[in-house]
Length: 233
Length: 244
Ligand SMILES: Nc1ncnc2c1ncn2[C@@H]1O[C@H](COP(=O)(O)OP(=O)(O)OP(=O)(O)O)[C@@H](O)[C@H]1O
Ligand SMILES: [Mg+2]
Image 1 (cartoon, each protein chain N blue to C red):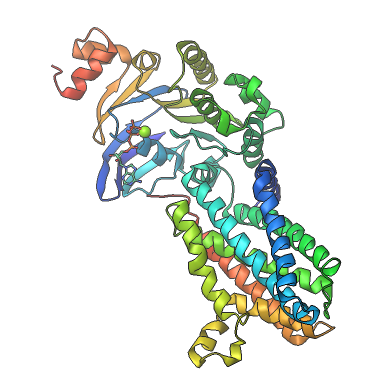
Image 2 (image 1 turned 45 degrees about the vertical axis):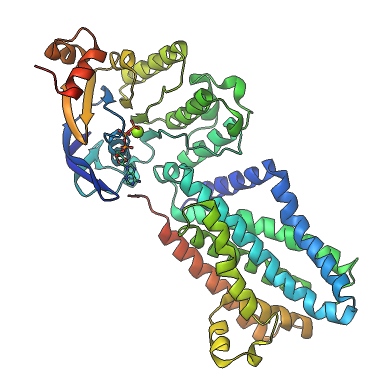
């Protein structure tokens, strides 16, 4: 996946000013940065639903959003995008048939996110964390080679977060590329690489260990604070 | 376009309606109730024979307009449209999925109203019942297509609901239901010529007068079908894969 000089204007504001980076296949990349810095905007550009003002976004060798990518890229939006009046299973079965995923895929992803017991519950009545997991499940349908996950673990307890990260790791082991945005630092430590953004620019890029070392911080939380506030050496 | 995605979309929309018993009840019950009211307000069998079918040209149109504009606005604002746009769903799959689902609902709606009208209310229709069903269902699809188009210009459900009086009531006033079109001022008549509901009413009037399918009826049906298609295409143009 390659992003070159990506610029995005939303409303009247320049949101991304010329991002450039590359992500290798099978890499697990964490996207961090203060609220409003442009993480969601970048992810929307990666899946090809964002109008961009300039630059190039290539995913799996094709321009982002091209027809050939629509079965190969899974996207979980930050705000759950489900039919509130349908049950979890009905939602997943619908998206599975749109993706042309095999029968039984809906059941598989429900188990993967631990929603098997809630399959017949209407989405509107799910708890916040359950709804988030149902939203994540949609992205896992079919056999995506790239997963773009916008804050997938928000509102989840540590046990569930742990389970999901094991799942992400397992997927990466099979060669799936993951881009995961997050505000939780212990999660960030589980990625192969972190992209730290501030105000539409990439401030730092490296492994969690390297970021810690370069700032001389004791932990990632501290490193994050130092980088964002510009105190780093 | 992919038929299995289109059908999956139709099934999904019908499932949503199935979960919403009240909307389903209102969709079928309200037009039937209004028809009963009309029959007893007019209270003259001859008059009801002339006016009843005209209302069958208006109800499905108005109701489908409102239901579709709110339903598609929800897809736009709830993020499901954006999600679908990252998937291999064609715009036509979505539009035809809606058209099939709401076409079926319209068929049930019109069927229920007709069944009550022809039996209990003693409606005496000159023209063929099948032709009336065709006009009414096409009319419902026209309402649906315009609702879909209107939803592109609404930001909130409040606005979407306000579009009903804005898009629909002028057509109801000018379509010949209240005053025959040729008795209106010239400029109003000219406007009425380009409003699709006028042709629905004209078709229904023809059905109350002529026992066979006339040239006027065929022309009206063709115009309604063309308007529906045009609005669907315009609606498709408002569905964007990329948004700002
Ligand atoms: N539709 C829009 N129109 C105009 N500006 C927008 C729109 N959506 C987002 N923005 C602005 O773009 C900037 C980046 O937003 P974005 O959603 O990408 O942030 P984010 O990094 O994902 O934040 P968070 O961590 O809070 O989710 C913000 O300043 C936001 O106000
Ligand atoms: Mg965000």
